[in-house]
Image 1 (tube, rainbow, N blue to C red):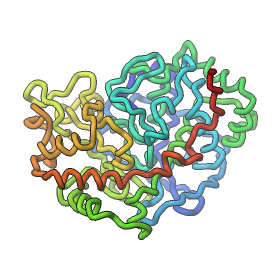
Image 2: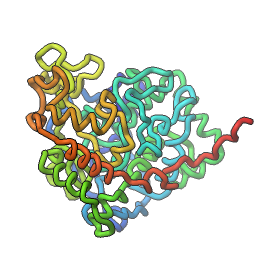
Image 3: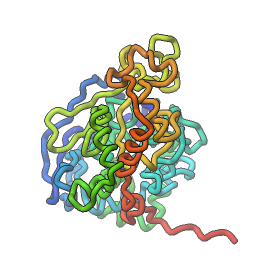
Length: 408
């Protein structure tokens, strides 16, 4: 999930899979809801996309959200209801390297389950080896995001976001283009195991022939199913565990030091959107990382929301990501320029980094604070309670393909 790439004109049609109408449920089958998320920043640079005809038949949702009572169900596009078959198909596609242009990279290449679906890199690497200006984002509870990627207010659904890594040219990620797009579909069609999976997920096409519309919808459904709600934080909130003294102090400091202003419960991120949301927060923040010209400039390779809106005030603005499983997702920040949680705390305590402390566009929440060594240790102790060990081992989210035999 990186900057908005340049898309080939022939693939602008694919962008029509981005449905804005949404639906949701909790511990019961989904029901359609005609509600659309609002954005506070106009997506002026979003590519136009002509409408594609709607499918005549939609599979009825048989999905049940099993969530704690403090986490309302996410919104789901009305033209892509959650189903067991669709999530199962999406899991295979998420891990299938044949989905990339050159057959070398899957979605899972940059989103490893053991690292809470990040890859441990400061900069992601595309299928052609091209380095990206930003770090791959975690996918746990990604269905509650109001926007996607680090700095694009135009991407308001997983379906809309997914066309970027598949078809984008700048940077190249999956590397699907005019020269190989039919070959990619044919690879999947040639695998006899896929036809019944596609047919079950999309009964409107009983032939089970892969299409890009169905691929995008299936993978997006699998990503919505990546639920992380069994951290110690969750166990404490549910009365199944207790914080240590250090964790409790860290939690109190997390709130009193205003960390919670940008990383709000229950998902510990910004832009939380659920079926219960009345007015979504789609704010972005400048964290004072850079100030290259004394006027707030960020590196040209990754300048923030300004890249989409063209507004000078959006220089250096990025979405506050979830802190769930933050212990596993180093390095930190949009460009991976902060190596450890301790360094993150030091940066915020200092009110920015280097010349970035004087960035005129820096968030007013980022002001110097005195943290003692004990404060620092307590904050880290609390942040580690957001780690969900079940999530990174859950077989429902794991690679479904047999492991290749080890070479002797």
